[in-house]
Image (cartoon, rainbow, N blue to C red):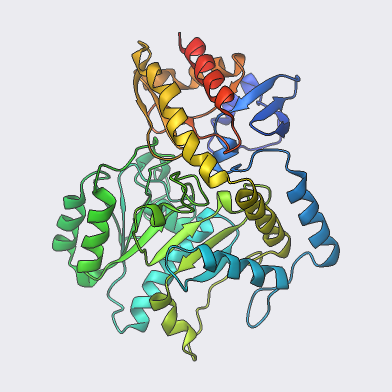
Length: 409
């Protein structure tokens, strides 16, 4: 019991019994453990290291910014120059032209901000009864109060009681389930529908053909705000050469929640993209949205984001993500023939799952993969997460597939 660190999402009894997996450095698509062993980082940290590890350009940008101004408050009329510059840059790539950018400290913050803004927006429209927020089974929307209430993963809600009575879930893969809820609860009572374009932590599930377009139209037809949760898929991970899934599928969402790839995880930062018609009541004058974070729009984080976006654009990493979409499918699909594997879910973005036939074997598989030089994690019900950085080469993809196959055999 002398181990001091409390890990997130962990059985700490097991961690203290076996010892932690300690990572000491990273470079490109690789990380090294405390014993000096090199591992292919199959998860890009936690979906976020889009530009790869060891980018001194980002570290230098942060150091330079901290040396001049670490941060100032973003409340009232205050901001830093780099934060404003970043907001303009994000507005230029936003799927909805003219979007406003509200900065947060991470993905969970972005979700809670979207829930509060959705309710407050309807209040300003004279419809305060529109409070219910809706998500899907298998969905993960962070671990703040609103995100926990929205979770479609029952274990993430167990033991906390009811955080929000006005939260509902519908089937993750059936648009008619959303329509049925709207008809049952009443559109006049529903504020927003939260949708991950690809379900991430819930097991890496790709949307059925036409699903995203259909739920978007249902929301539009019934005056329900559509919130695209792109904490995972944003900033290129959706593939197809697009910055966001909302662009790739022309969703025109009312809000987009982001984080992770915004800075490639070099420092914490999130952002909520707000379509102009949602922001209008608050920008017209006389209305305060009494919400914000001490570190929202942090100047050092903004500098990291700017350097990160520079790398993505300069090195054509959106195109590299499109390449990886195809190569991961090509090299990982044959793993589906192994007895230990139920299916391999690929074909959309740099987001892939190797689903084990026996979910109970997932923790052991993660340990076995480390012995074969691969760092990954279990997601959902026994799925091995494969979501590497965009700098992973063709040769490294083939090597990754070989190593996974060897471990699972």
